[in-house]
Image (cartoon, rainbow, N blue to C red; front, side, top):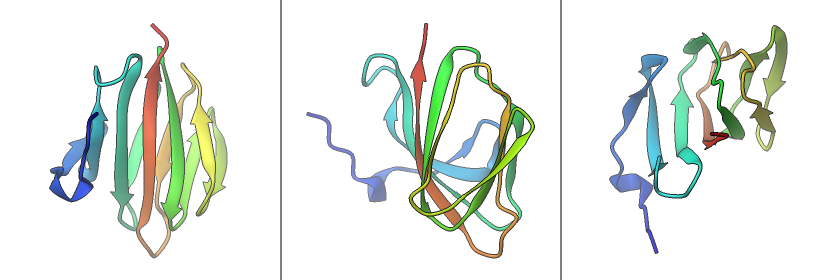
Length: 112
């Protein structure tokens, strides 16, 4: 058993923008093929640049607020309860152009 209390996990910057904070609840190596299981909060105006992961799926589930995702140049607005899966190699970015914080949980699964 592995128990993680999110209140005890330190916030760290996401690799694409250190000003955007996340809490890594499960790290790479904890579960086979799992790259991370994290929560993140984007303040109004925060964004992550366009990037891709050649060998990883990423799944995002919105807990609070709204966010804009751009996947392969297609913009999608996500709200509470929405879930999006980014496939390996898909170019994507995330942003919060709205007036309230957006919060989500997400995880990555390696394909290699």
